[in-house]
Amino acid sequence: MNKLLTGIFMIVLIAVSSLSLLAAPKATAQSETWPWGNASEPYPWLEYLKSLPHDTNITLIIITRHEATITEKVRTEFLNSPVAKQLGIDNIRFVSAGPELWESYIQRSIESGTPIDVAWGGGPTLFNYIDEKGFLQSINPEINPAYYAVLYEMSKIPTEIAGVSTIKYGPDGSVHWIGAAISSFGFTINHQLINDLNLPVPQTWTDLTKPEYAKLLPDTPLIGIADPTMSTSNTRMYEIILQAYGWDQGWRILTLMAANSKIFDSSSGVRDAVIRNEIAAGITIDFYGYTAMHQNPNCEYILPQGATIINADPIAIINGTKHPVQAAAFVAWVLSQYGGQQIWLDPDINRLPINPEVFNTTAGQERTDLEQAYGLATTSPGIDFNDTLALLTERAMQFYFKATLVNAHDDLQAVWAHIAKAYLDGEINNAEFEYLVQKLTDPITFNDPVTGEEVTFSQEYAIQINDKLSDPQIYQSLMTQWEENARERYLNAYNLLDQILNGELTITTGQPGEETGTITGTQGETQTTTEGGSFGSTLTSNITLIIGIIIIVAAAYFILKR
Image 1 (cartoon, rainbow, N blue to C red):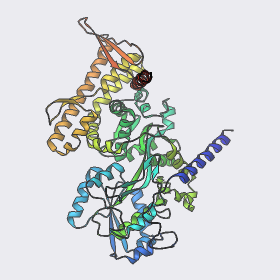
Image 2: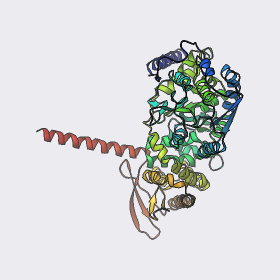
Image 3: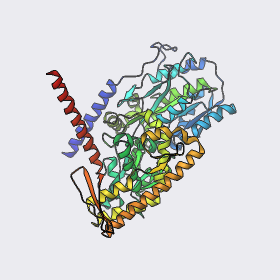
């Protein structure tokens, strides 16, 4: 019966996926009449590109965030394709660089006279940033007719997937980048470790903050995350959490998640640790999760329902390329269901393609599992993610995370280990635990090096300081203050725990949604404080506020109507 129900579920899922693909609007090109007439697939544009002026025996230079598994397979497949052979592309040189280096790398390549030709992989935020700097070429056939090939392949791609745009248009109305693959963001778990250690199976981001995952700390962290300054995918996941739960609550979640975690210097390191049974769960981009499932049957990729997004991972031509025909050919090949879209189907890569027509090819029909994953990802509810807001706060968020949660991680994790152990061992009650969590995760205060005023790291401040962090003096001042003040906050939480355990501090709980702490000092003085409640209390308060506003508005309406 279970197998029958599973089979029915899969059939329904594939049917829903197929309907969504049919219903999804496709990108429209500037013209339905292509310069190559009725030439057939694959690559109907190839002969036309050959007729355009171009150099031969060239090396394409591509800046990328893709790892070697992808780039080496692409090098082999593309150079052996008729596209590369007939257009005189002898080699590809991939430039692998961290996101913080892209601007300088592209600028230096232009100044040296050997400009980078194509940018590929790294997420919308990174591509939007280099587009703002003027580095992305408008895909406009009036600039170069070779760009018709890109627009042709783009016409096969849905303009939106799960409400997220797959194409970026510039102020000139031309295409600036196109999604080459899609990604979701969640976490990969290891069922063997979870079962062996009797851990709860996480389903949401907040589940990764539970004290049960601290039971082996500080010696053995059971969660894995990556330094955001070293990982664009982890940066995006932290941004998702900050937008899904709100800035203040989001930072509390990130703080506890970091406290439970081993922090890796790459997202692939997180994935590999889950595969090797070193950690019970690690936050990952979807294709890392699918790869883990392929390599270790005990692994499962989980999509946090209602708290994730779908990203289109871009490809673009760099402004100033010396090889526009070949650059356009590479981008078109990547988007084609007969070319680069089949790279994603490789069991060692397991990415979700942007062009759903790849599932109609021979290779695509062998990956029904990936088609099911595509259907699930593209039909799952997500948050209304604000890319502009993410870009406005990204550098500030990364550096604040680095200073307070990575650089000060040893103190954070040690203190959290003591708090969690005291709670799990029954030495402190729920009210005391929630109180200490609040104190551990409270925002830190510091002096703004620009104004000299005492501030906290609010969303507004992050926007204000984001671009100023390129100033070395401002950067160093904030990084030092953030780390030192974070360590002081963690030590204060530890001292409060010590007072509770020694009977010097008593916490009592008031009404649901509030925490009333009665603090009795050593001199017998009593002070009553009200703290924010658990993660759900903020949501409850907000809902109550909204309902109250609705009632007031309705009452006003009926009074005026009378």
